Length: 243
Length: 243
Image (cartoon, rainbow over all chains, first blue to last red; front, side, top):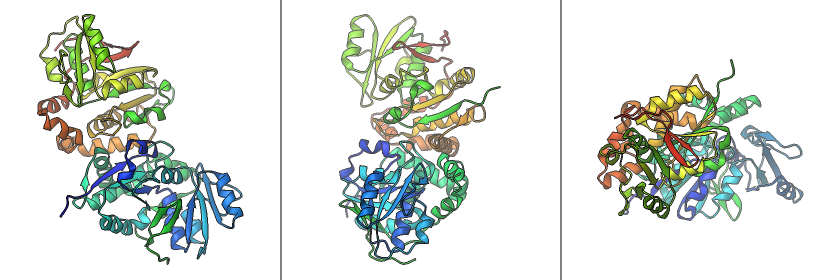
């Protein structure tokens, strides 16, 4: 029996260069809202999601027949099929559809860890599936909080803390960032919505009328899907989709 | 009466470039052990401390008659008068002496915020003096955790959370990193040593036989000094020194 693999937390996209991402299975976390929306779109049947960094690139995919989703500064960009609200995708029938997706933080974080050993997307809505995947891999894990522009945020850190708390014992907690995330999760567990409501990003979303998105993003295990990133494309590693 | 000034937390030196440091009074925090040692050296009478980045530069100051302190990888570097242990300085008579000081994290963080509106050094050992200074300034505050080589650490985050918790109400908590630090502090308050003992840096120090340094660094208000950084030199802004 080998030693338990290590688990670490990267608290914001700006810190990704301080890790040797090649050594890890990277879990990209953007609870509000990109990774939550990836899960919903896959659960609604999307056959692939292409995260792209620019609006221009997203439009180019649109001209090739892809559905397009574009968000900047938390708002839907006019001229695209979708923004970045999980509820928009929940209402859509995406069976067999391909989707190009650009967001402020989540797609940027995916790009930044593209050279990791494996790359998946995590959110509360697919948490148990993610935990099972990480246990099966039994490789070093880097939980990558996308954050808000270069800054740390509560909701991604909270989720990283939840994952670390569930995997403690099976994985070796290897750094203080992970202990800090676990402390936040353990303190917030019974008051998750309280903590989220005090977050700066929540204020931004609230000001834009997105309370329902926030509430939705905090539900656990709604969608048994696992967005898996390979060759620039997210596919569902579980090969099944049903809402 | 103006609005309360903002208070933010930078969780590690690697994130300093994501802040406009010119807008803030910056508090550099390196609890284990640089900013703790700065306070002790000033309390023991040091008239100035010059933080330098290289061993070579430190030696150059030594040839000019300065006392020298040098630490790398938590250990004293041979050939210098001191390492980075607060207890070494506590035992020394430094009245009127000038000290050149190089460390892995703390001096690097000071250099990185040199263009801030004001720069001071904070630690548990001078916490109340620091709080009074920040209240008197009534300017935006950036609490800069030095961290451990680009990575977040528990002890600096804990201290940032303590400062933010004491200033809440008088300052406006402006970001999620601050909320996370406050959550850690509030959860750890009664178990501070427990949390420190689970930190990665503590393990490093412990392995090197430095338990006494850790215990010492967690005591509050031992030294009524305020290391103030200007033109590359730290002086005691309180103009008094007595142990």
